[in-house]
Length: 164
Image (cartoon, rainbow, N blue to C red; front, side, top):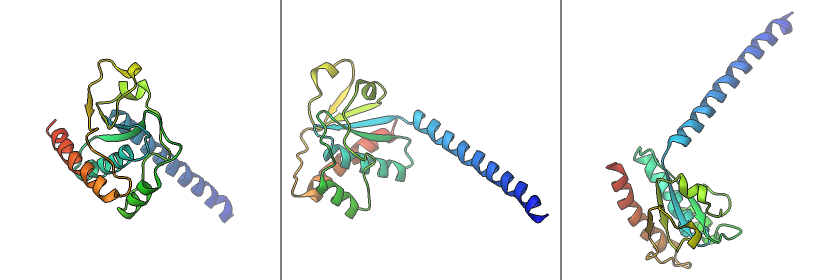
């Protein structure tokens, strides 16, 4: 008899929990769709853009700014740089991108801001406002130095976005 009584209670609890979790997932999707996107683009999508995105998203969250960043490449590598993976891990971060992804026109069309460390392909030109950070040299042997240069620039960008 107890099994008959407990089964409906367990079933109700599972259904209620499922509806709650599904509702939160839908809220997260809505929030992401409404969150302005910043795209960081480097040639291989494996180093500068990955570090920029990891730190941008961390700092934007800490500062309670409603922005998120994604990383893309114009000619993406097959995997994220091992030095970058190790550096981010030491910093307590991970890449939001599992592998480098090629930039698409749809990415650009939906972006609030586009920041490049390289030139965009000619067929991507148009009325997209692009900010060039290609003066930030990446030192493959010195992750910390390269990260610090990116962090300095990100600080200025986040201050500017905060005022919007």
